[in-house]
Length: 391
Ligand SMILES: C[S@@+](CC[C@H](N)C(=O)[O-])C[C@H]1O[C@@H](n2cnc3c(N)ncnc32)[C@H](O)[C@@H]1O
Figure 1: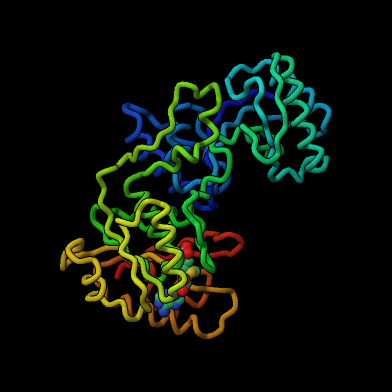
Figure 2: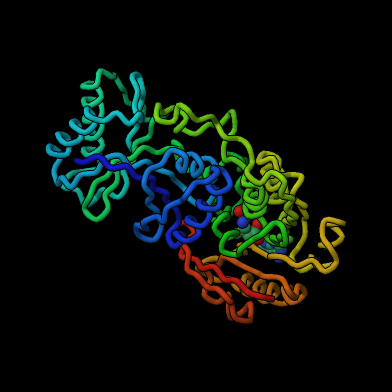
């Protein structure tokens, strides 16, 4: 085992560039004079920076496109449990970086450890014992709490190397806490943020329209992202604030671009989904930013949109249409008709950009035109793709 000191952002496969861009913009705004180094990319959905508490604090507090922020602390090329235990006990006993304290509770989350010559439970047990015994050598008593631990430890194998990391948020960051109701096919919150970044959504110049908004994830993320709102609140605090290494940090609840005034219209044909969207927007604190409409896309003409937005939009307003329409691997005919209607509907918005997350191979042909950007991106277990059109 060896000590390492990395800040790792984990996100959706294919989003390294988007995650890098977002972190450097946030860090430049949040920390005067900070120099954000170029990260190493590990695979298609992970960025590795040299560890820095300021950068870590910004990432956990504000980064919307990643799903986890980890502090990588040890790694080992051991192939068996005994040497792994021996190495890890020694490393923990010698380590004073302030990620552990007397009385702390830990939980271990294994990921991708199938290549190790032992089962997952044995690996978890070995790491747990090594952390407890290593801490004891430093005079600290720590205990295991699988449900509500102070520190979540991530154990992962990549390219034959096992690494041990502290999860600085304390869990998956895409669970923002505002989604009270999810609807039928909700988008992961960080995937919605990725789509906004890929579409280059700019709240200063774009009106945003999601005409098939479901429970409102894209619209809500857009409003929160425009102001770079904190992901946390007094009632929901990230794990890193408990670590001695971050004892000089306070909870960050202030928005980094607090004066942004996003103009967003979100609509859905389903009254139940519209109800969910209203409740979620309220919980996220963005009700004032969203104009929520209950309508069939086909009835949502530029005139209807302008009427709903009132003086928030200018008559020659341009913007972004961004949505994830219904799709499935099996066609039942209805979807194709809808995609055809969407193509026709988009013709009423010349000068706009339109972007969609799709998982239906027949979408492009049925929608018509050619996308300026086409990018494969996974949506949970579905292989989806993102298409951006200039209308
Ligand atoms: C995949 S879901 C969108 C999920 C959403 N992004 C979320 O995070 O909850 C697709 C949505 O399209 C809506 N929809 C289907 N046909 C529609 C139409 N003709 N006009 C407006 N909305 C429609 C459905 O009611 C459904 O809520």
